[in-house]
Image (cartoon, rainbow, N blue to C red; front, top):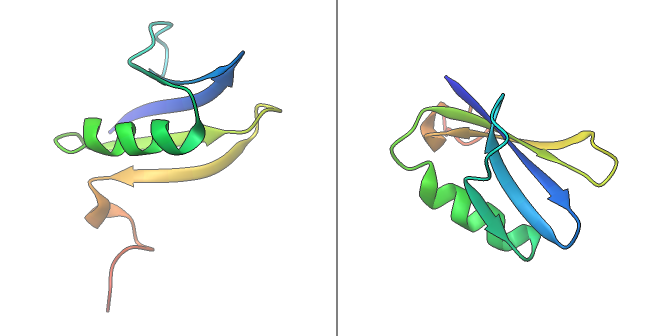
Length: 74
């Protein structure tokens, strides 16, 4: 499983793969980066950590969504 991080830098939100400095996606606000990340992850098995301004992990998203135990019904 690949691990990605969303961070807030200056005036933009950025998605990067863990260990890589290159920005895969950039957006002007948090909701836009989350929407773009969801589309980007459609064909990937990944964990995405969303970091707050202080650097701590505020949210964790697993892709595809059916791998997220909170998203399953049963």
